[in-house]
Each structure stands twice: as structure tokens, then as C-alpha cells.
Length: 282
Ligand SMILES: *Cc1c(COP(=O)(O)O)cnc(C)c1O
Image (cartoon, rainbow, N blue to C red; front, side, top):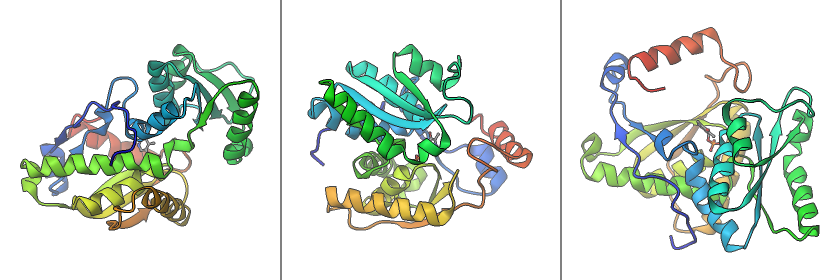
């Protein structure tokens, strides 16, 4: 791939076997540590931003506009990476509280504020119209002489998904030097919130023979919704890179999500704690 790309990810991220957790589950379990793509900006979103922010820079953008939940990882990664590039960030963050309430002094939104991102709180109803809200903001900024670049929720479009095609190339290189004895995995399992990771993983896992099947565990919407979202992002990525012509099998599983986004049951918290205690992974 020769399209513009920034180097934001501190890669390759480790591919590790959590021995005690794997033994307790009776699985040959490996973990790709994409929580370690960077510092405070780390996480899966940084891989997508390598392509998205490169395009923004190439277009001469001086402000990036994006959206997410109030404590969005994607918004935080975008705000921090944009600050490093000297690009302003405008974040539309969804709240169930009042849109004129004081902003929280903790978590991701504190980091957003520290780097000087402009935060505008919006209601869940407005958030459903997020594409229009961001397009309107872009037009307003353009009228004032700025050069805005809009990044969709989660950085999940075809261009952003290419970051996870690259991640699968990274795993292939790790397999080739002996991780998991070099053989492809039976399955990759990952959390799915806006679909871009799933799209990149199925395309990259197929292209680089990293796994036959991908389980995208829905964290918010149901399986049919995500199947449609992921299919759209896959098609966008294939339009950008026609060589991405063999996708791994995709299973969207919505059977493990909590009662609502960012809300978990006692049983789910028990599983998380047990996994953390058996692995040291948080
Ligand atoms: C965003 C996010 C995901 C989901 O990735 P999508 O590409 O949005 O589906 C999973 N895990 C974490 C920690 C995330 O921040």
C-alpha cells in the first residue's frame, strides 16, 4: 500500500500467550497487545488514525472533527494525535446528561481538554444524526476560512479499516518468526463498537492468512446492525484497495454485550476480574 500513512503506532505490538489464563480456559490463547500502540493515545484507534490523519494532512486540514461517547477512546486518541500534528480537534461527545453541564474532570475527556480539543456535548437523539451534525460543523468552519476534515465515529470507514489490514500483516510477520508455531489461528476474537476494526481484521486476516474466522463481539448494537455496518466498511476498503479480495469468515456475536453501552452485569464483571487475575491483563 503506497497511500499516505503517518507512523503513530509503536509497533509491532507484542503478541503474547497469557499462560495461566490459556490453561484455565483450555485454549491455545494468544493476545495481540494493541492496548500498547502508544502512550496516552494508545489503543486500536491509533491504527486507523495513521491513514485518516495522513489524508487530513495531505488535504491541508487545520481542524479535525469527530464524535463518540462522552468518554470515547476514539475521540481521545484523535485529540492527542491531532495535537501532536498541530491540528485542532472538534469533538462531538454524546451525553445522557445536560448538554450545558460542566465537562467531567476525569477519564478521556480530561485528556481531550488538556490538549485543547473543543468539546461540544450532544444528546443521544442528536448523536443519531452525527454525520449531519459533523457535516454542518465542517461547513461552518469552512465559511470562516478553516480547512476541516471529518473523521466518522470510531474512525470506521474504508480508509481507517486499512489500519487493521496492516495490523494483520504485523501478526503474520510475528507468526513467521515462530509465534503460535507459525500456523494461522483458528479464530480471532475482538470487541466491536463501530465496525472498522472488524472490517480491517477480516480483510487483513484473509489476505495474510492470519485466521480463517473472525468473531466480532458486539458491544452496543445487535448483530444484524453490525453485519450491515461492517459489510459497508469492507466494501469501502475494497474500493480503495482492490487487492483486498479474500476476507476471512465473519461472525458477529451480540450474545455477550451488556445491558447498554458501557454498562455491565455482575456476571460480566466477574468474568473480567477472573481473566485479569489469571493474566495480569487489564
Ligand atoms: C473502539 C474500541 C473497540 C472497537 O473498535 P471498532 O473499530 O470501533 O469496532 C474495541 N475496544 C476498544 C478498547 C475500543 O476503544
